[in-house]
Amino acid sequence: MEILRIILSVIVIALAGYSLITKNFEFMSYLMLFLGAFMLVTGLVELQKDRKRFEEYMFIIVSLFIFFVSIQGFILN
Image 1: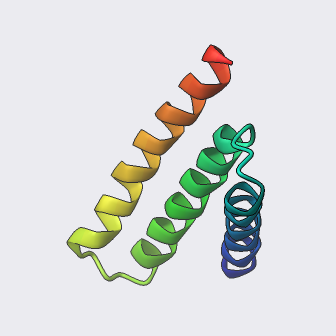
Image 2 (image 1 turned 30 degrees about the horizontal axis):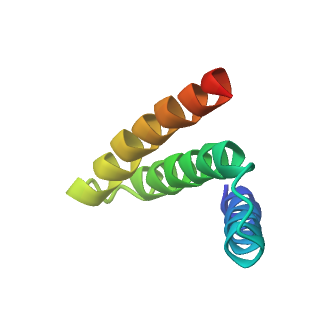
Image 3 (image 1 turned 120 degrees about the vertical axis):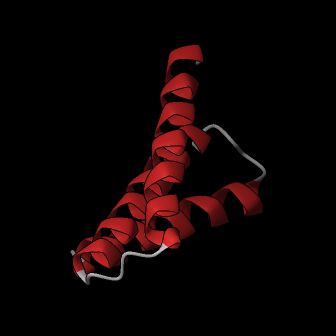
């Protein structure tokens, strides 16, 4: 899970950097999809550590919202 979190964070940073530098936002739906996956994995890793705090649940809830927004972006484009 830790390796997956690192891979997802590198992908998110690369896509965000590309969008900021080139001012080309056509990959924003992919960025949101990978960001949602990253937040979901982060929330699940923290839940596995038995740190049942508010932040872990918020990571999971926000990741579901980001997945919803990403899917809408794919549908509308």
